[in-house]
Figure 1 (cartoon, helix red, strand yellow):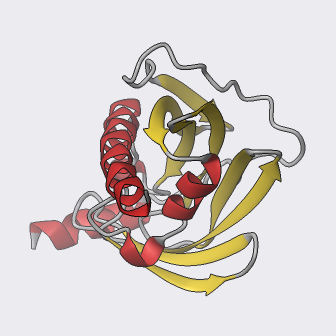
Figure 2: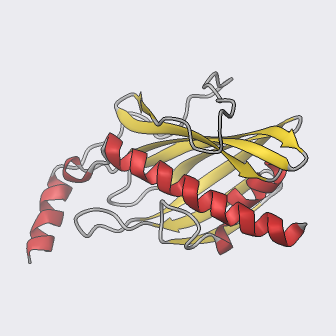
Figure 3: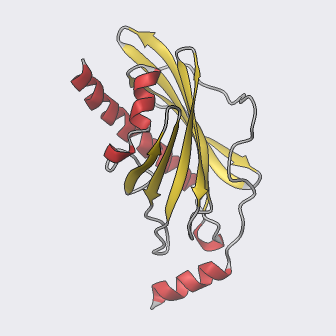
Length: 202
């Protein structure tokens, strides 16, 4: 009963996010160069009132291999921090549509559809993503992954992840600390997954 009351209160306090995707055009967001194998310091971000964050870390593999891992949603359950279940809906050359099922706050577990677009720049790769079909409890989830090769033998990639989150519900909004924890958890899981994938490939 208490959970139902909280959900009803949350619905009454719902709002539209100030942004649902990254701005169009060239992106000047910084990509850090590795100082060690540990993630850089978390940077809190905000875009038109939507809270976000940025974290960079190094993983094994080339940018193309890391991009393939990030888009391998049929195998992503247990290897990523943000959602509980993942499923590819449509896959094209440089575009992937996927369904993500989240475990949210206040017993609200949204299921959304996201679009991922891949942009290549020589060896480097950028994946931009955004929700195309939101659900109650997640009005905005967008950002990008910037993949820059920093070593060839063995291949190492610097992954800079930016994420912006807005539940659309005043009572269940992600805090900067929530986003920081999510990014650090994602970094640990992604590195472990890439270590397993590259060990099988080589």
